[in-house]
Length: 232
Length: 301
Image (cartoon, rainbow over all chains, first blue to last red; front, side):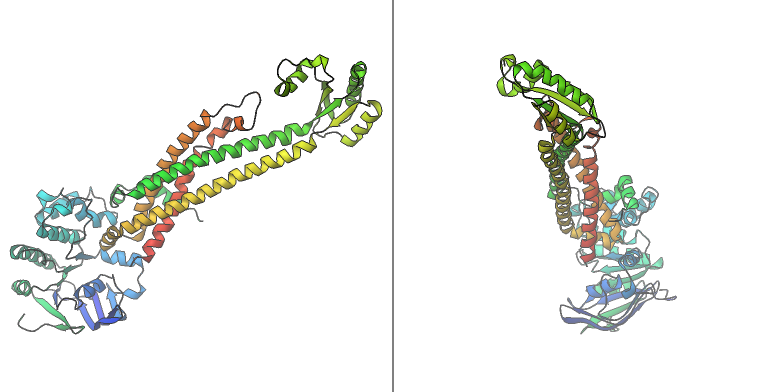
């Protein structure tokens, strides 16, 4: 794990209120380039909210949030869009455009950023092959299995070669074998220098990852973020 | 509203990828096509009405303003003498370009709509009419009346002012009403397209969420919707315009009677106006959808 340079995402004493109640409190987190983090905690603890803060979808109620050195509060919508091009997000429910093919969905970040899809064609095909979806490239997302959807979402998240990859329960809907395959892909990305933050319940996945990379495990409990115990 | 040349340019050039990110189907597509078509159809009629009444007002206000009539009511034996005297007076009146007495056939033609074609005009005590054409400067009507009263006792000058003025006013009002209708049609089109665009944006909230997740700027998302709605409005309005023009062509043509209703339509270079309707509908749709998209995207978290 490479931990050097300015943090790509930094939270300092961040609190976030939702529906009148405080969901997160005094959260401080610094994601250095090339680092690997797991985020655990019970359902409803605020893992997804923390991830949303990390890609600028939410604004902290209090505290400082810096995305690539910029204060979130001073960022406009276009700035957030620029950040999203540097942060690949994998949701548990994947979020595809069902009227487009898998290939078009994976290429979506290229399209919205105005990149020439013809020029990127070779990279796109290579990426689809890397996640093992070459045969399913023309299928529509609803035709894919849970594992295939997760791999397609991962491919879409990395196609812009982002600095950070945030994954929310990426193995939530897949079997053990598929979760290991997804983990290997994420580890490969980390070895390429990408910063990884994975929110998961799956302790076995965390143990499997720690056999290959130096990963920091964080836990949200009682609205606060803390380092998880040594048993992980 | 500031004209967005770049936005219109992007619209014409298009972006195949951006076009595809919004699902192609939905009731809003038909709603936009239908409302743009119906409004263009109505706009063609409003336009035809405006142009026809414009022509009418011009004719009544301009051509008829330079004509007058002298009516000679005299016993049969004096009719020719009084007509000749009136013509002499007119010939020496400043502001009269020319004057001529209508012959029996022309007078019969004037009476034909009321009495039929077989009117024995020579057996009836019909006054003789003299058509007077003014010069651009015009004549002094009061002075001419006094001279005619002195020299031709049976002559009465009618300078058309009494009946022409209210007709010109009515035609002008009708023309104004036509243009007002066009403005209202434009406003109604904008309102309907705004509603359709809002419905489409709300129905595609999930699509917008995904696009934002992968780094799409609001301008990119808005462009995808704006282009689609603009092209739909253009297509619908083109169909409405074509049907409207066919309906106008199917109206009875302006005949010799030159009645107002039979004159409703386009003449000469006025035919250049109908193709402007779909273009204007597209421009209205462009700005209406852009405003709706910007507002909706601004309000979306």
